[in-house]
Every structure is written in C-alpha cells, then in structure tokens.
Length: 104
Image (cartoon, rainbow, N blue to C red):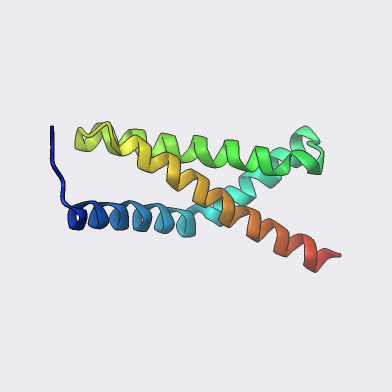
C-alpha cells in the first residue's frame, strides 16, 4: 500500500481542485447554454433547472475525463471529471441566475 505524506496528499488535492476549477471556468458558460437549449426544447419547468444543470455538467465532464483517462491510461482521472462537472454546474448556475436577474 502506498504511504503518502501529508505534503503529497495536500499537493494532490491542490492539483485536483485546480483542474476541476479550471474546467468549471472554461466550460461553465457553454454548459449553461446547453442547459438553456434543453430547457427550451423540452419545456422543462424551472424547478428542475438545477438538476438538469448537474446532469449535463456531470455528463459532459465525464465524457471529457473518460477521453483523457483513455489517452493517458489513468482510470482514476474519472473522479476528477466528476468533481469538475459539479464545479462547472455551479458556474453555469451562477451564469443562469445572473441572466434571470437581469431579465427580471
């Protein structure tokens, strides 16, 4: 079993959070647009917008991280993708809320 030090674990956590946050910033607005198109096309009630946002965000990030995991040969990268999808969903929700407030 690997015996990682506190410093190594801290560095790993910092890298994982940084990758996830960068993904969220990069794809948050794109995800928000995909969610909006889905809401309009399927006439989804607003109360489900957050769940739809989370589903699309997690799905998109899992696809991207699955490709990355396959290319680099590291299946543990999928966990980073899940975290990235959650963070992107938060970014997209913030962008959605800002649009809703400016429209009101």
